Length: 307
Image (cartoon, rainbow, N blue to C red; front, side, top):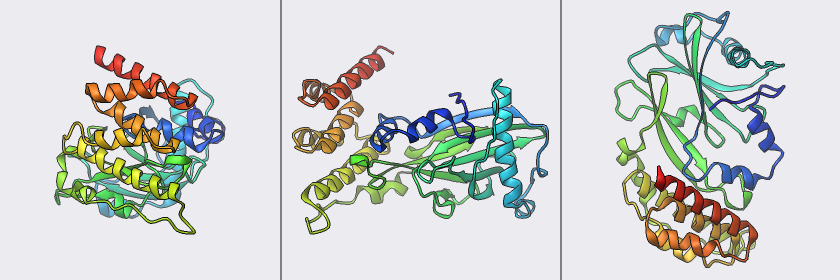
């Protein structure tokens, strides 16, 4: 995927999103789209530091040097695409160097592209003057201490990426967890390789109790989000292809649009006739928003089956 950059060094696609409602952004993150945003190669005229060959050397590299690399890479990428790089100023929240494969170390930096909500892992490896960069979206706040893993205890790392379910345009909620491995300058969703890591997501979930702070609607939404998260893990990691179908059949009858959205998304992610029938019912919804989204989902499923 190739992106254009605005004058702040942010991808134009995401700069536009900032002017839209949170709900539209959240919807764009769903539909079984993996969190990888970009993967690019480009040539830089000057590296702000010698690329480390071991972790001892890596510890001597400063945040200022890392920031210079990230911004320099953004400029080089724009120039290589024949675009004006503008005044690129990304921020780097945290960084480290890590082993992912048998090759040289990767730099893992967290950036925000001008928004505390739109946060990313920048995974960079440079050899001489040629750099490769993978940008992966993860909902905030990114914590390298918790999200840079070594699940096999062999010194090779994985990245835990979290995509918020976030109904009602909220910026917090349940999260869909992905485990990424980096190998040969490629990001690979390796969630299914680590089922034991995901077992805590399968724990029973109890609904909350309404209070002066949390209305019945909020309690129902939180409960549905948590179930949606667990259903996603059961399907994607443990291969339970129809997990969540019974929940979706209940959610489609909800009086809350946000919960009907979760039904719609579940129907789209499950490949069977009962899920298709659920989408067809929602395609006749009185809500223009739900009706249009369901029609689009049916079209995507049809296109997917053709290919």
